[in-house]
Length: 359
Ligand SMILES: [Zn+2]
Image (cartoon, rainbow, N blue to C red):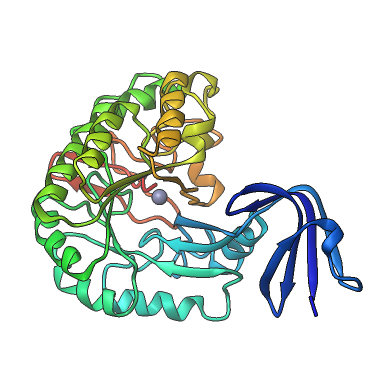
């Protein structure tokens, strides 16, 4: 006896899209049949031409609970995921507070999610200077891998890792069989343009060379330690040749990109439209087309959302200042503080940073 048949013209089955009906029994898929083969008496849900897909896994999501639940918590984040066809999210180790860089912080997060998940969730741990001894305990408690930044993360409580930090962590991760995932932008960044309301000013501050430098370092370390290494939200097409060569060499090296890099282009972003701010930045239309081609050829392995909400006032819509808006920091001329965000301060020895970035 089948409980439900979901009927439609676009069922994404292993062999490709087809027309028909997905038969469900006891909460599991029993089979995919032609519409005429639905057993009589079965309840039918008509999906029409909507896509019927296996639920998606979004492995790059920032939920912000505990600690910044007013930005977004698990209750709404996982309901939104379910509404979008996402059946599993993997939550980043920031911008929750405390950040997930210790066993204790992971426990607080696991306690915080209880009773709030509308979809499955898994968790990334974080690598920051000084937390090497926490990696194995967090792995024992279930994190699926570890994230590090090579530039300021936007939160002073999640400082970026140095090469030495990665050299210490990668053998541990290789032994544990867990991936290292990295925000691959390596300082020094460039100076922004003068008009802070222009997207081009922000774009100038984070050139493709920041990504290329970071990715070359990661490939070198991946080769040395044979630790699974993954580039999050790759934006710069200039880095694709290096990624492709690393794959051809047989290194366990992968990369993801995001819908915003595949959809938007810099010349379409109006002055002051800080909702487009993210890091690394959205680049040119030509760059976008190269990302599409790399995705098609498997140089980029998959697409993730980098879903990362914040309180609307942090995007500075009134001022339209791309450099001050949340979503990726750049050097600020003076320290700045934002409601709900970590106080700013010296991001690294090389520069002062606002509490801006973190995608
Ligand atoms: Zn992110």
